[in-house]
Image 1 (cartoon, helix red, strand yellow):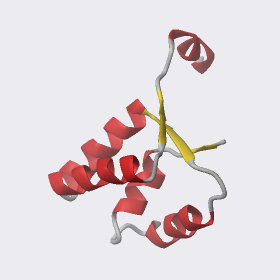
Image 2: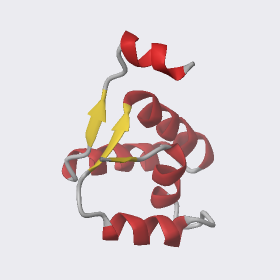
Image 3: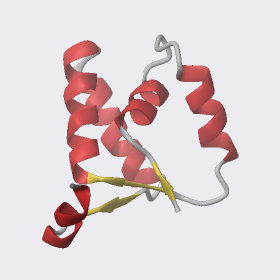
Length: 83
């Protein structure tokens, strides 16, 4: 399982980000589909919209659909494991 966070998605969506090439290399080398969560998707969209454009957010969402990225829902039992 490869769990990707906001930093990864933001860098991958922003060629001007200093971690863009590293994120791209990692994305291209993955042997399985990455997993993320709805809070990560929301945070990534917020950052893309505020720092780049609303279109960057829309493109990110479209890529999640096209690439069949699994988006996991957080359950109450998951929240208990956080602390």
